[in-house]
Length: 237
Image (tube, rainbow, N blue to C red; front, side, top):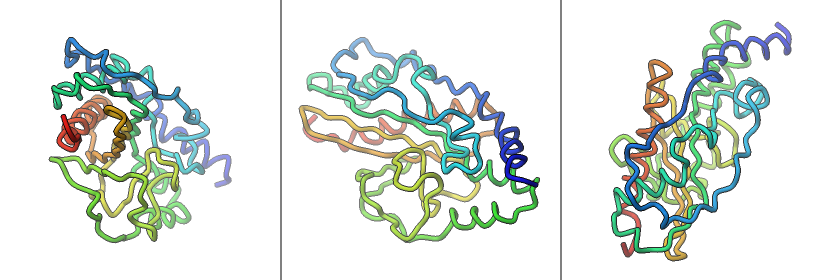
């Protein structure tokens, strides 16, 4: 099978992900006060489907970025609402949101579907590389319920391990050694300041969705648990 055929096949196999309704409706948790957060997030900047998550030759293959129009209400309001819910006194402080990005990473599962049809070969070799063993997580990692929270996401904890995704892009990639086999991963990045004090977190939420609805539900739970999990780390509130 030639390169063009593989590209077409992979697009068909991942086509379900392209049509998934990942819209996250969190309007029900919106408190009365959200204007305490200044929204300094940047506009969406992620490759289109056929250049990224639908292209098997891309390191972004199988990794869906939650675009701004997939949230209700907008991301800054969701952030403000949940931060107020889990850290109520934060509303008396000056908060500036710099990043709130969510990625749904089903890369390994997507590649396995393609490998099953193509008979493995090169794709299976790539899978083995991406699933390489690595050292245990260090002190900057802690687990809150079902979610893994990284308090120092700029640090390369596993320099000898290949990520599942794009190396050093700080998007939807994760370390295979930190995730249970067979799970998809929702990667959430949160960067903000409170009274000019910087905070930066990355969270991993692993799950095994059964349908489109459970993917959207997982994203919603990942966002909620991320804010609940980081709230105790906010100093002076």
